[in-house]
Image 1 (tube, helix red, strand yellow):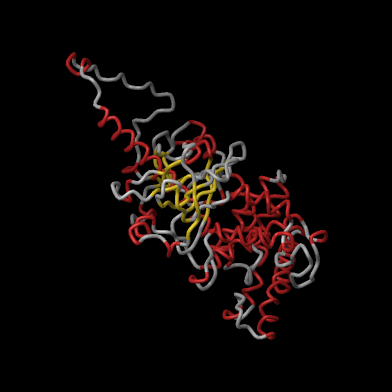
Image 2 (cartoon, helix red, strand yellow):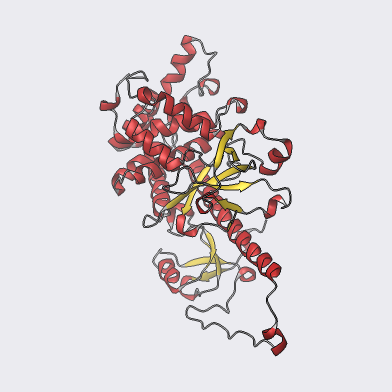
Amino acid sequence: MQDRTTDPLIDVNQLAVGMFIHLDLGWMSHPFPLSSFKITSADQLLVLRRLGLTQVRWSPSKSDLTLQPAASPLPAPQASKSEADATPDPEALAREAHRRALAAQHEALRLCEAQYGEAVEGLRGMMGLVQAVPQEARDQAESLTAALLDKMLVEDDLNMRLLNEAAGDRSTAHALNVCIISLLLGRAFGLGREEMMELGVGALLHDIGKLEVAPRLRHRDESFTSAETQAYQQHVVKGVAMGQAMGLQPGPLLIIAQHHEHADGSGFPQRINMDRMSTGARIVALVNRFDGLCNPMIVSKALTPHEALSLMFAQGRNRFDSTMLNAFIRMMGVYPPGSTVQLTDDRYALVMSVNPGRPLKPRVMVHDPRVPREEALVLNLEDTPDLGIRRSLKPQFLPRSALDYLAPRSRIAYFFDSASNAPGELAA
């Protein structure tokens, strides 16, 4: 990997469209999707000049300085008469369409995974400060939440996307998963910016008390003695104390205090019911349970996302706010990303993203032995009225060829992108 620190510095006022730059500020301190990118518009130049930087690093080898903000397209080359009279080759056109769709699909996933990776790095840095410099950790938690909200493109519908294996350790991936899904659910409920900020900060920090619990007791186990269970449950009280030392607002503190409470009062530590739980705590309790079922410490005990939703629905009348649970299922889809399914034409598939408003019609990658896996396009079931999902399957029940091809994730990680920017798709 190229060392970015060897890239030359350039004055911000000398930046131009086409330059590939690196912002050493970090992902949380600017509004761009990534910290390294090519400048493509005059609007981006204006934002860069307002960031307060005097210099940035740029990569001449990755830059294209022939680009201009208002450049006129080059005239198309004139075809010879024989070329003009030739009938287009349908197979060649189909191959080119597939190539373009595949490139768009790969780029959309690359962008999501790069954003997720930068968010993970921000979260790691913040968690490293919680005990040593608590108020600075609070500032970084707020910055990371604000960055996620800014990058959600609130004017658009959003897709929830399945990523490749989650980066980092389980606790980091869990905190980020809970934060991202909670923010998307809060957005679906129409929460305002201030409420969303409190929700995001509380979701990121809901388990901080585990930093002061013995490592072997940080994750509940059925074999725990009553003393070990009590020690595990202490992470909630410890988390509230740490949150107070950080100077958190009441909203995030309530989320930390109540993320293990249940709607029927059977949770811990206060055994309060739904009426006494904050909105943010009801959201995080729901999402925390879902991620815990999908991504347990012991991988062999993991449920598929579809199984996790089904179990939560069965428990819903007791453990969760039913209105919120129903909204969560609509948002996640009946078959959430990461579910392995069999289609009504008997093919096997992996759910990649959800279609907003069509919970039974997600986007799926289909096992097709005729197409190399790296060239497989996503199939949008919303566009195929005669094709649907017959059933959900555990990965171990897939035929070996389908299992190797679809390669279901052992750890489920989600991010988001704009529904209007859907990747290339394949017709049935």
